[in-house]
Length: 328
Ligand SMILES: NC(=O)c1ccc[n+]([C@@H]2O[C@H](COP(=O)([O-])OP(=O)(O)OC[C@H]3O[C@@H](n4cnc5c(N)ncnc54)[C@H](O)[C@@H]3O)[C@@H](O)[C@H]2O)c1
Image 1 (cartoon, protein in one colour):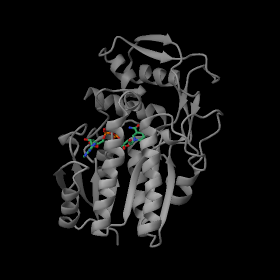
Image 2 (tube, helix red, strand yellow):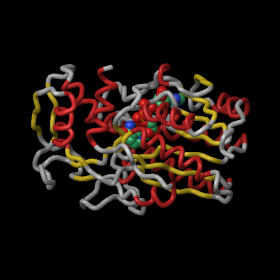
Image 3 (tube, protein in one colour):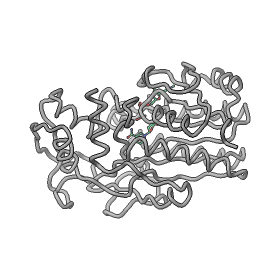
Protein backbone atom coordinates (compact mmCIF):
# COMPACT_ATOMS: atom_id res chain seq x y z
CA UNK A 1 0.00 0.00 0.00
CA UNK A 2 2.70 2.50 1.03
CA UNK A 3 5.21 1.09 -1.50
CA UNK A 4 4.83 3.66 -4.23
CA UNK A 5 4.44 6.85 -2.20
CA UNK A 6 6.68 9.74 -3.23
CA UNK A 7 8.39 11.58 -0.39
CA UNK A 8 10.06 14.99 -0.76
CA UNK A 9 12.96 15.22 1.70
CA UNK A 10 13.89 18.89 2.05
CA UNK A 11 17.39 19.12 3.53
CA UNK A 12 17.97 15.49 2.55
CA UNK A 13 21.70 16.02 1.87
CA UNK A 14 22.35 16.80 5.53
CA UNK A 15 23.18 14.62 8.52
CA UNK A 16 19.74 13.43 9.65
CA UNK A 17 18.11 13.84 6.22
CA UNK A 18 20.62 11.53 4.53
CA UNK A 19 20.09 8.76 7.10
CA UNK A 20 16.33 9.19 6.84
CA UNK A 21 16.55 8.86 3.06
CA UNK A 22 18.41 5.56 3.50
CA UNK A 23 15.65 4.28 5.81
CA UNK A 24 12.85 5.52 3.53
CA UNK A 25 14.42 3.63 0.61
CA UNK A 26 14.61 0.41 2.65
CA UNK A 27 10.93 0.90 3.55
CA UNK A 28 10.08 1.09 -0.17
CA UNK A 29 9.38 4.80 -0.68
CA UNK A 30 10.45 6.86 -3.66
CA UNK A 31 12.54 9.78 -2.43
CA UNK A 32 13.24 13.18 -3.96
CA UNK A 33 15.96 15.11 -2.14
CA UNK A 34 15.71 18.92 -2.27
CA UNK A 35 18.71 20.82 -0.89
CA UNK A 36 20.79 23.95 -1.44
CA UNK A 37 23.99 22.27 -0.16
CA UNK A 38 24.62 25.04 2.35
CA UNK A 39 25.69 22.38 4.85
CA UNK A 40 24.72 19.25 2.93
CA UNK A 41 26.95 16.94 0.88
CA UNK A 42 26.49 15.53 -2.61
CA UNK A 43 27.85 12.15 -1.52
CA UNK A 44 25.11 11.99 1.16
CA UNK A 45 22.22 12.13 -1.33
CA UNK A 46 20.62 8.70 -1.45
CA UNK A 47 17.28 9.56 -3.04
CA UNK A 48 15.97 8.54 -6.45
CA UNK A 49 16.12 12.16 -7.61
CA UNK A 50 17.94 15.31 -6.54
CA UNK A 51 16.75 18.88 -6.96
CA UNK A 52 19.24 21.60 -6.04
CA UNK A 53 17.27 24.57 -4.76
CA UNK A 54 16.48 27.04 -2.02
CA UNK A 55 13.75 26.55 0.54
CA UNK A 56 12.59 30.09 -0.15
CA UNK A 57 12.11 29.29 -3.87
CA UNK A 58 8.38 28.55 -3.78
CA UNK A 59 8.11 28.26 -7.56
CA UNK A 60 10.79 25.57 -7.72
CA UNK A 61 9.18 23.75 -4.79
CA UNK A 62 5.80 23.76 -6.55
CA UNK A 63 7.42 22.55 -9.78
CA UNK A 64 9.22 19.78 -7.89
CA UNK A 65 6.11 18.66 -6.01
CA UNK A 66 4.11 18.55 -9.25
CA UNK A 67 6.81 16.88 -11.35
CA UNK A 68 7.42 14.06 -8.88
CA UNK A 69 3.78 13.78 -7.72
CA UNK A 70 4.83 14.19 -4.08
CA UNK A 71 2.53 12.65 -1.45
CA UNK A 72 4.32 13.75 1.72
CA UNK A 73 7.09 16.16 2.71
CA UNK A 74 9.77 15.87 5.39
CA UNK A 75 11.31 19.25 6.28
CA UNK A 76 14.87 19.08 7.66
CA UNK A 77 16.31 22.23 6.07
CA UNK A 78 17.39 24.72 8.71
CA UNK A 79 20.28 26.59 10.25
CA UNK A 80 20.98 24.57 13.39
CA UNK A 81 23.69 26.19 15.50
CA UNK A 82 21.96 27.55 18.60
CA UNK A 83 24.94 29.62 19.81
CA UNK A 84 25.29 31.35 16.44
CA UNK A 85 21.56 32.14 16.45
CA UNK A 86 22.08 34.34 19.53
CA UNK A 87 24.81 36.33 17.76
CA UNK A 88 23.04 36.56 14.39
CA UNK A 89 19.33 35.76 14.73
CA UNK A 90 17.95 37.12 11.44
CA UNK A 91 19.33 34.37 9.14
CA UNK A 92 17.80 31.80 11.51
CA UNK A 93 14.34 33.33 11.29
CA UNK A 94 14.78 33.89 7.54
CA UNK A 95 15.85 30.31 6.81
CA UNK A 96 13.91 28.35 9.41
CA UNK A 97 10.68 30.36 9.58
CA UNK A 98 10.38 32.25 6.26
CA UNK A 99 11.77 29.24 4.39
CA UNK A 100 9.24 26.91 5.96
CA UNK A 101 6.42 29.37 5.15
CA UNK A 102 7.48 29.14 1.50
CA UNK A 103 7.34 25.33 1.74
CA UNK A 104 3.89 25.44 3.37
CA UNK A 105 2.69 27.78 0.59
CA UNK A 106 3.99 25.35 -2.03
CA UNK A 107 2.27 22.44 -0.27
CA UNK A 108 -0.97 24.41 -0.01
CA UNK A 109 -0.84 25.37 -3.70
CA UNK A 110 -0.34 21.74 -4.73
CA UNK A 111 -2.75 20.27 -2.15
CA UNK A 112 -0.07 18.16 -0.47
CA UNK A 113 -1.26 17.87 3.11
CA UNK A 114 1.19 15.59 4.91
CA UNK A 115 4.31 16.94 6.59
CA UNK A 116 6.90 15.66 9.05
CA UNK A 117 8.82 18.57 10.56
CA UNK A 118 12.27 18.47 12.22
CA UNK A 119 11.76 20.12 15.55
CA UNK A 120 14.01 19.96 18.56
CA UNK A 121 14.20 19.55 22.32
CA UNK A 122 15.41 23.18 22.25
CA UNK A 123 11.74 24.24 22.15
CA UNK A 124 11.53 23.26 25.84
CA UNK A 125 14.26 25.68 26.89
CA UNK A 126 15.79 25.22 30.30
CA UNK A 127 14.63 22.54 32.65
CA UNK A 128 14.71 23.36 36.34
CA UNK A 129 14.16 19.81 37.46
CA UNK A 130 15.76 16.51 36.46
CA UNK A 131 12.42 15.08 35.35
CA UNK A 132 12.01 13.56 31.90
CA UNK A 133 10.81 16.11 29.33
CA UNK A 134 7.27 15.41 28.24
CA UNK A 135 5.58 16.93 25.18
CA UNK A 136 3.06 18.67 27.46
CA UNK A 137 5.78 20.86 28.95
CA UNK A 138 5.08 24.41 27.68
CA UNK A 139 7.42 25.60 24.96
CA UNK A 140 9.92 28.09 26.35
CA UNK A 141 12.96 28.31 24.06
CA UNK A 142 15.96 30.28 25.26
CA UNK A 143 17.59 31.13 21.93
CA UNK A 144 16.46 32.23 18.43
CA UNK A 145 17.15 28.76 17.01
CA UNK A 146 14.72 27.11 19.46
CA UNK A 147 12.31 30.01 18.98
CA UNK A 148 12.35 29.54 15.19
CA UNK A 149 11.33 25.90 15.65
CA UNK A 150 8.64 26.77 18.20
CA UNK A 151 7.21 29.37 15.77
CA UNK A 152 7.02 26.78 12.99
CA UNK A 153 5.23 24.35 15.32
CA UNK A 154 2.66 27.07 16.07
CA UNK A 155 2.29 27.79 12.36
CA UNK A 156 1.74 24.12 11.67
CA UNK A 157 -1.07 23.93 14.21
CA UNK A 158 -2.80 26.87 12.47
CA UNK A 159 -2.32 25.35 9.02
CA UNK A 160 -3.61 21.98 10.19
CA UNK A 161 -6.77 23.62 11.49
CA UNK A 162 -7.26 25.87 8.46
CA UNK A 163 -6.26 23.54 5.62
CA UNK A 164 -6.97 20.10 7.06
CA UNK A 165 -3.31 19.03 7.01
CA UNK A 166 -1.73 16.10 8.82
CA UNK A 167 1.57 17.10 10.47
CA UNK A 168 3.95 15.68 13.04
CA UNK A 169 6.72 17.73 14.65
CA UNK A 170 9.47 15.38 15.77
CA UNK A 171 11.40 16.93 18.65
CA UNK A 172 14.84 15.35 18.48
CA UNK A 173 17.15 15.18 21.43
CA UNK A 174 20.91 14.91 20.73
CA UNK A 175 21.37 13.28 17.34
CA UNK A 176 24.56 11.23 17.29
CA UNK A 177 26.34 8.30 15.62
CA UNK A 178 26.54 7.33 11.98
CA UNK A 179 25.21 4.79 9.53
CA UNK A 180 26.53 1.36 10.60
CA UNK A 181 27.60 0.66 6.98
CA UNK A 182 29.53 3.95 6.88
CA UNK A 183 27.48 5.52 4.07
CA UNK A 184 26.82 8.74 6.00
CA UNK A 185 27.73 10.40 9.26
CA UNK A 186 28.05 13.68 11.09
CA UNK A 187 29.96 16.41 9.20
CA UNK A 188 28.87 19.76 10.61
CA UNK A 189 31.08 22.77 9.95
CA UNK A 190 31.79 24.21 12.45
CA UNK A 191 31.23 21.18 14.66
CA UNK A 192 29.68 21.98 18.02
CA UNK A 193 28.28 18.60 19.05
CA UNK A 194 30.03 16.78 21.88
CA UNK A 195 30.63 13.31 20.40
CA UNK A 196 32.30 14.42 17.14
CA UNK A 197 34.37 16.94 19.13
CA UNK A 198 35.63 14.23 21.52
CA UNK A 199 36.35 11.98 18.54
CA UNK A 200 38.33 14.77 16.84
CA UNK A 201 40.32 15.11 20.07
CA UNK A 202 41.01 11.36 20.16
CA UNK A 203 42.19 11.58 16.53
CA UNK A 204 44.57 14.42 17.42
CA UNK A 205 42.68 16.99 15.31
CA UNK A 206 42.01 19.02 18.49
CA UNK A 207 44.52 19.51 21.33
CA UNK A 208 42.04 18.90 24.13
CA UNK A 209 38.34 18.56 24.99
CA UNK A 210 36.65 21.04 27.31
CA UNK A 211 34.18 19.95 29.96
CA UNK A 212 31.96 22.91 30.77
CA UNK A 213 31.07 22.41 34.43
CA UNK A 214 31.99 19.54 36.75
CA UNK A 215 29.88 20.68 39.70
CA UNK A 216 26.38 19.91 38.46
CA UNK A 217 23.93 18.00 40.60
CA UNK A 218 24.52 14.74 38.69
CA UNK A 219 26.34 11.55 39.79
CA UNK A 220 29.69 12.58 38.26
CA UNK A 221 29.11 16.36 38.27
CA UNK A 222 28.89 16.75 34.46
CA UNK A 223 25.82 17.46 32.31
CA UNK A 224 23.58 14.62 31.24
CA UNK A 225 21.97 14.52 27.79
CA UNK A 226 19.81 12.10 25.81
CA UNK A 227 21.79 10.84 22.80
CA UNK A 228 19.75 9.22 20.09
CA UNK A 229 21.38 7.28 17.27
CA UNK A 230 20.81 8.97 13.92
CA UNK A 231 19.61 5.67 12.43
CA UNK A 232 16.99 5.52 15.20
CA UNK A 233 15.92 9.06 14.26
CA UNK A 234 15.69 7.90 10.65
CA UNK A 235 13.37 5.02 11.52
CA UNK A 236 11.29 7.45 13.61
CA UNK A 237 10.63 9.45 10.43
CA UNK A 238 9.56 6.35 8.53
CA UNK A 239 7.11 5.56 11.34
CA UNK A 240 5.85 9.17 11.34
CA UNK A 241 5.22 9.04 7.57
CA UNK A 242 3.31 5.77 8.01
CA UNK A 243 1.27 7.32 10.81
CA UNK A 244 0.32 10.33 8.68
CA UNK A 245 -1.14 8.04 6.01
CA UNK A 246 -3.35 6.33 8.61
CA UNK A 247 -5.11 9.64 9.29
CA UNK A 248 -7.53 11.66 7.18
CA UNK A 249 -8.70 14.30 9.66
CA UNK A 250 -6.77 17.46 10.59
CA UNK A 251 -3.95 16.32 12.81
CA UNK A 252 -0.97 17.91 14.52
CA UNK A 253 1.18 16.12 17.06
CA UNK A 254 4.55 17.06 18.59
CA UNK A 255 6.47 13.89 19.47
CA UNK A 256 9.83 13.52 21.24
CA UNK A 257 12.44 11.34 19.60
CA UNK A 258 14.87 10.46 22.35
CA UNK A 259 16.16 7.30 23.97
CA UNK A 260 14.68 8.19 27.35
CA UNK A 261 18.10 7.61 28.89
CA UNK A 262 20.87 10.08 29.66
CA UNK A 263 24.68 9.90 29.51
CA UNK A 264 27.01 12.36 31.17
CA UNK A 265 29.83 14.23 29.43
CA UNK A 266 32.34 12.12 31.37
CA UNK A 267 30.64 8.90 30.24
CA UNK A 268 30.88 10.05 26.61
CA UNK A 269 34.58 10.79 27.02
CA UNK A 270 35.18 7.38 28.63
CA UNK A 271 33.35 5.65 25.80
CA UNK A 272 35.44 7.46 23.16
CA UNK A 273 38.63 6.51 25.01
CA UNK A 274 37.53 2.87 25.13
CA UNK A 275 36.44 2.63 21.47
CA UNK A 276 39.37 4.64 20.05
CA UNK A 277 41.97 3.17 22.43
CA UNK A 278 43.43 6.68 22.68
CA UNK A 279 44.26 8.87 25.66
CA UNK A 280 43.81 12.63 25.29
CA UNK A 281 43.83 15.86 27.25
CA UNK A 282 40.69 16.94 29.10
CA UNK A 283 40.26 20.53 30.37
CA UNK A 284 37.75 21.20 33.10
CA UNK A 285 36.15 24.61 32.68
CA UNK A 286 33.30 26.64 34.13
CA UNK A 287 29.64 26.01 33.41
CA UNK A 288 28.24 27.64 30.26
CA UNK A 289 25.34 30.02 30.66
CA UNK A 290 22.02 28.30 29.89
CA UNK A 291 23.27 24.68 30.17
CA UNK A 292 20.86 22.75 32.41
CA UNK A 293 22.15 19.74 34.38
CA UNK A 294 19.90 17.12 32.78
CA UNK A 295 17.90 17.02 29.51
CA UNK A 296 16.35 13.63 28.84
CA UNK A 297 13.25 12.77 26.82
CA UNK A 298 10.11 11.15 28.03
CA UNK A 299 9.98 8.82 25.03
CA UNK A 300 6.65 7.17 25.85
CA UNK A 301 4.56 9.12 23.33
CA UNK A 302 6.73 8.00 20.40
CA UNK A 303 6.19 4.41 21.48
CA UNK A 304 2.45 4.89 21.81
CA UNK A 305 1.80 6.97 18.67
CA UNK A 306 4.50 5.66 16.31
CA UNK A 307 5.34 2.22 17.74
CA UNK A 308 8.92 3.56 17.86
CA UNK A 309 11.69 3.20 20.39
CA UNK A 310 15.42 3.76 20.10
CA UNK A 311 17.21 0.49 19.30
CA UNK A 312 20.79 1.55 18.60
CA UNK A 313 21.17 4.36 21.12
CA UNK A 314 23.47 2.79 23.69
CA UNK A 315 26.52 4.97 23.99
CA UNK A 316 29.18 2.48 22.88
CA UNK A 317 27.27 1.69 19.70
CA UNK A 318 26.77 5.39 18.93
CA UNK A 319 30.45 6.14 19.54
CA UNK A 320 31.63 3.07 17.60
CA UNK A 321 29.60 4.01 14.51
CA UNK A 322 30.69 7.66 14.77
CA UNK A 323 34.34 6.62 15.24
CA UNK A 324 34.25 4.24 12.27
CA UNK A 325 32.76 6.97 10.07
CA UNK A 326 35.27 9.60 11.20
CA UNK A 327 38.27 7.31 10.63
CA UNK A 328 37.23 5.50 7.46
N1 LIG B 1 21.71 17.50 14.72
C1 LIG B 1 20.97 17.52 15.83
O1 LIG B 1 21.42 17.10 16.92
C2 LIG B 1 19.56 18.08 15.80
C3 LIG B 1 18.84 18.11 17.01
C4 LIG B 1 17.55 18.61 16.97
C5 LIG B 1 16.99 19.04 15.79
N2 LIG B 1 17.71 19.03 14.64
C6 LIG B 1 17.07 19.50 13.41
O2 LIG B 1 17.20 18.51 12.41
C7 LIG B 1 17.31 19.10 11.12
C8 LIG B 1 18.50 18.51 10.40
O3 LIG B 1 19.65 18.73 11.19
P1 LIG B 1 21.07 18.18 10.71
O4 LIG B 1 21.90 17.97 11.91
O5 LIG B 1 20.88 17.07 9.73
O6 LIG B 1 21.62 19.47 9.94
P2 LIG B 1 22.42 19.58 8.57
O7 LIG B 1 22.97 20.97 8.53
O8 LIG B 1 23.38 18.45 8.42
O9 LIG B 1 21.27 19.41 7.48
C9 LIG B 1 20.46 20.47 7.03
C10 LIG B 1 20.30 20.32 5.53
O10 LIG B 1 19.40 21.33 5.06
C11 LIG B 1 19.99 22.00 3.95
N3 LIG B 1 19.48 23.38 3.96
C12 LIG B 1 19.64 24.30 4.95
N4 LIG B 1 19.04 25.44 4.61
C13 LIG B 1 18.47 25.24 3.38
C14 LIG B 1 17.70 26.05 2.49
N5 LIG B 1 17.43 27.32 2.81
N6 LIG B 1 17.29 25.53 1.34
C15 LIG B 1 17.57 24.23 1.01
N7 LIG B 1 18.29 23.41 1.80
C16 LIG B 1 18.74 23.91 2.97
C17 LIG B 1 21.49 21.91 4.18
O11 LIG B 1 22.25 22.07 3.01
C18 LIG B 1 21.61 20.51 4.78
O12 LIG B 1 21.74 19.54 3.77
C19 LIG B 1 17.38 20.60 11.35
O13 LIG B 1 16.12 21.16 11.09
C20 LIG B 1 17.73 20.73 12.81
O14 LIG B 1 17.23 21.91 13.36
C21 LIG B 1 18.98 18.55 14.62
